[in-house]
Amino acid sequence: MIFTFLKRSAAAAMLLALPCGAIAQENDDPRHKQMQEFLQAKRSPLAEHAKSFLEAADRYGLDWRLLPCLALVETGGRREIRNNNVFGWGNGRIQFSSVSESIHLVAERLANAAPYRKKTTEDKLKAYNPRNRRYAAHVLTMMGLVGPAAVAAATAVEE
Image (cartoon, rainbow, N blue to C red; front, side, top):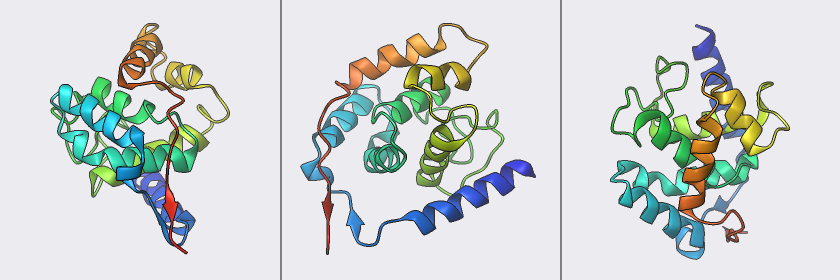
């Protein structure tokens, strides 16, 4: 019940926070191509959600490589998911209406929830899976395979 409340509250907050007229232009963003190629090389059907990963990372100030790498580690990149829960969030029990909703909710939690707020990516990963001491290093290594953190994001805003 608490997970349903959190999920609905975060989804509503995301809708209210959407900037009017902002549109991510995947053709102009070099990260989009890098992410798609990486996910396709991993044979992940999540490649079609590269735009959602980038939008969520940009909106919540996360490293653009973090979310797809978490999804790959946690659920095999959608090969082992249920209920659009590409991160196994809530031990896989939480249901999402879409993959995009899953991506945006987890991004919002990683940015704003107490265990993760104001932490480095490495420290967020340590909090995400505190039982496995090698977890953060594993995800960070995978992030390095996607591409450099400093790839410039290019977005266009319609006025």
